[in-house]
Length: 316
Image (cartoon, rainbow, N blue to C red; front, side, top):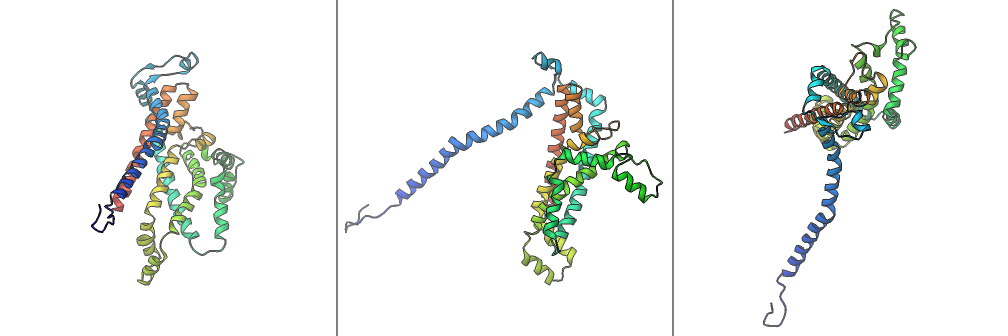
């Protein structure tokens, strides 16, 4: 557009066109690079899951593997057989019990330790470094260490029980009793998991605004009042993430059970992870093992979903 004096007037069409071209380039970039990458990741994630679910509806045994023959479709026979034998519901109950107890105790003790470390105590940095040792140790090695502690009659636990009871109890085998074996695995799991959750909660605790805490203190709020009404509300996202990770981690816990009890005594510690391994690699029934894995995955997803829904509802 040209005025009477000959000067040009910018209409703004050029910048708009350049903005549109930039948007087109961004969209093209997403389709050319990001979309294939996302599809590739999703494919690699879904292929094993879909394959496992499909195998759970077949009679796929070691003979099929060695002879390179496909399994025969048997609908829900694997699930029905496991249910009628009582294996599936027993493993579900033990798994849920283990997860609930371990996650609850881990959170309470980790929150307590995080509150202690958040104060100005001497040697806090050294304590944080030492606390990470159980988490750094591989889970299988941790299981072996605790199996030596629980060993009867020469383990450390047996010695301590004998000392505190004045020699009255001399045969305390925590892993050999149906009523106490699961607690032995829980103790080992707590030792392994508390350090990481403590540091995660501590990092969330240290991000609470100091001015908000000071304002609550000036208003007369005590320590526990500040904890409940200031600290925990600011840590909700951290708490939700750490507890969700703990639930998932304990649902898929296998190495501790394998090294400490291997599902015994008489199935008292046979979780879904242990049952899946036994069906697939001990009984060589891969279809049955896949059926247990499918149930295991579904229950874990449902539990995590319910937890997140409850947490969001409490947060709203």
